[in-house]
Image (tube, rainbow, N blue to C red; front, side, top):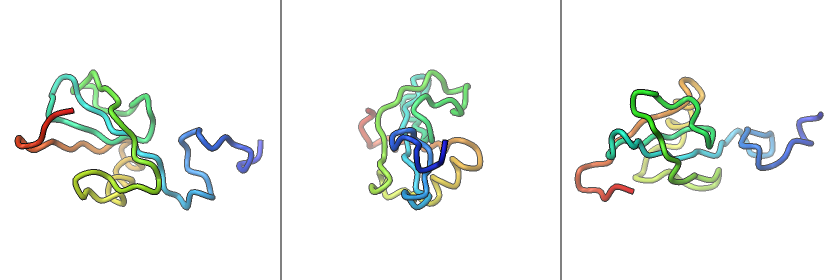
Length: 95
């Protein structure tokens, strides 16, 4: 199968997406203030010590992450370790 024949919804970076990935947002059920970004909807690489994880959203390639977080930093962390953790401030309402 040629790369261009892959489905557009397979959550992998394709050449026409300019190396920008879809980022999934997760909430830790073990720690309600803890969130994570991951590169796959299943959250397969999220840290087990904060499981279970629940998917609560996604950031499309053309959208900015919440709370002015850097997409470049998030994508680099996902590529290097499979996820990036972040914590809601105590003033934020948990999702």
